[in-house]
Length: 572
Image (cartoon, rainbow, N blue to C red):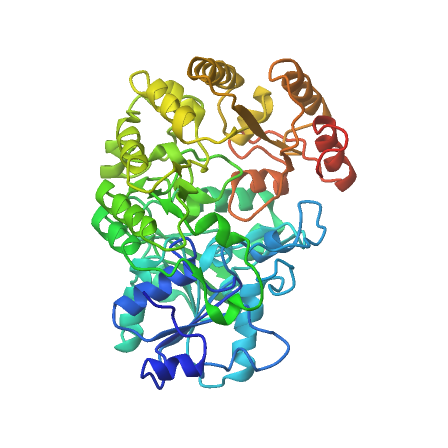
């Protein structure tokens, strides 16, 4: 195991005079499979490239950004694991005091619009013209014209605002290897999947109309909300590698070329990524600056799969990780668990085993795997699609094997769980829940119904409250049978498009009478780029029906919606 170098002295120890690629990130450098910059860096390193990392550089001088010199091939820039505006501000646009990805925990190292700021920082001190490649969730979700909640404006692709050369979107391991090879060999990058770039005239690309779709221009979507909805719908249905076409959008006098998505990693390719050796720690250069809270969660956690077919309207996973589940092999997961157990600092507890939705591991529609996502149908909403066969059998087997490993005291499943999936699995659902209740929960189990009113749930793309009632009863029934005293905690959303104070009052009544609790976990909806809920927020229309939609935009009234449900004295 090794850290990637962050200083010239570390480069010298490796016998490196110059780096091929330098990654600049808004997170501190945690060498972990949960951190995008670390995964991309180690993937390139394993392919034979010399890679260094500059984490959270000071943007007021040259000291940090020039520390490793200039790369031979390109700069890679990411805001980090979270969009920088979401990391820095609450839904009510108040500055956040804390940052879990910054040593010491104080939110003072990640600039607003970090992707743009870091790109400008590089250009300020390096005139060599090495390409700047954008990546990470901030770039991925801002890759076409988008509504920006913080400025209340339609913004161009971040590629234009950052004045960068290439944008790499989605899960980038395969794409970055193809791109790096092309740059090294001075080959064209125009046909690489999973990237965006800028064309000065667009004529060559527009001729590819059989493979590319022309989106409404930036100027038209900026002025016309109907055009914005049209653009988003075209964008959304062209994100599956098996069915998607490329996209072209005129922005000023130039054109954004959005190539089709990269092919998903196969199971063996995914295993290879997670079989990479990571230090599972903060790099010593940054560790001396203070404790990094995020490490506590991810240090001894295991990712089992990527993607989510839940497609909640407020969630951007569908356009970043994809709507198709890609699962690691059981062998790869157990191998990682054994590596964790063998560490001197391991105390016997694996903090999480899961993915975006824990209980989607090894569950996917064969039709979708072969032919791509359905254009006009969702897997779980309004009801589970009949083509999707749900079985928790493989997850049960995996969890049993993990908890039986020597020196493991407890394996937690802390990732989100879709309780409707458990109830839909008539053969293994209750066995899975029993496994979770008996062995993988400590005190409380967190679930996210988000709301209970059909009108609001419809806008969210979430199932009805009948699933919640059934699951609650099954959970407490199992706890009673097994002698456990464990509880359910619930996540709810206030001020989602289509939600009024009336719906929040009904939610309050429901949680008080049916759930018999006073929830504190109520979040005010935050509009983030590339979600249908944000589309509703901006346009004040239901994009699926065209009907007008109530959207609460007054900050005080948003807070009031939350306060209706949150117990007096609860967290805000």
